[in-house]
Image 1 (cartoon, rainbow, N blue to C red):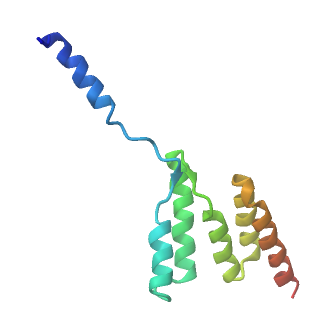
Image 2 (image 1 turned 45 degrees about the vertical axis):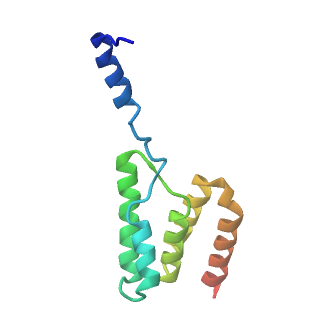
Length: 120
C-alpha cells in the first residue's frame, strides 16, 4: 500500500485539530484553594480575605466571558452573613438563585434565615 505524500499535510491537520481541548463551562479561579485553606488551616485567611478572593473570581469570570460555578454566590453570601453584612449576603443569595434556579429552595431558606437574624 502506497501513501501519497500529498495527503500528509491533511492528515497532520486532522490530527492537530483533534487535540483541541474543550472550553470550560465555569470559571473556578481561587475557589477550591480558598475553601480548602479555610478548613485545613482555620484562621489563616480571614473572612474578609476570603470575600475578596471570591469577588475577584467573579470579576475574572466576567472578564473571561465565563459563568461562575454553582455555589460561589451562595458561599459568598454566607461569608457576608458571617460578617454581619446582610444586604450583601441577600444580594449574593439572590444572584445564586437567579443564575441557578435549581438552588431556589435552598436560597429561599437562606434568605428567610437572613430575615430572622436581621429582625433580632
